[in-house]
Length: 329
Image (cartoon, rainbow, N blue to C red; front, side, top):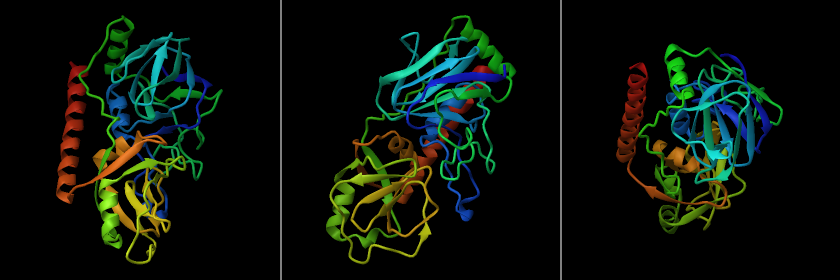
């Protein structure tokens, strides 16, 4: 079961192939890229017995329609869109059998902004610097270094493993594999952050605003960064620094008093003060926010952020091991 798997009949405004990201090249000015919501991408692969770093489709909330050219098993995770097969909802967070010549449509909106789709065997993609993620800036990786469009053809990367053949047979027989995975609460607007290196650039009133006020995700937001609309923040000194290292989740303060949260395609250095850093466990939640959505920062300590990270890591690892044991048995 290799070869062409999907024909894109209709494609929304930004759907790309992404994996866990491009690591080890930040010093050369190459962004990490990768899935905006890494947790959902991880789930999608693990549900199918794929390597967790396989490329998945990141489907941004807009109408899509895919024609399957052969039988396949897929998994949908994340939010934003409800997949439908023959006008019936296709479940999220469980492996699903899709027969050849079936049409999957994505039109009904649900909470969230980005839906992830994995296929057993993974998608065949272009490799760039040891990653299959699409880097739109340098036009490399993924599917010819660009977003997908109508008439594109996607292929399966590798033949199914013995375990995946068993999953395939079970699902094709009409049985279901329902797993007790609780999807994230994409409706929450609380985003936890820690103090950034230039937090003290803010005056006292702006510190209170940054920690307590609500901000809206601006339409001028993308995979590089989310610009936030709200009360302008003020500083006690010049709102610029010598270009310094930044990363995903860095909250920068512009000269106009607006905040920008850097996301998956973030640059590697910046000259704006870094007033906060989004905790890694909440980056997937932030990635599911769309323009117009409100968020509110909650300041926590570095120790609390580390504890949240370790707890999240252990939870994901437990789910991965549970799935491996289930499928192996």
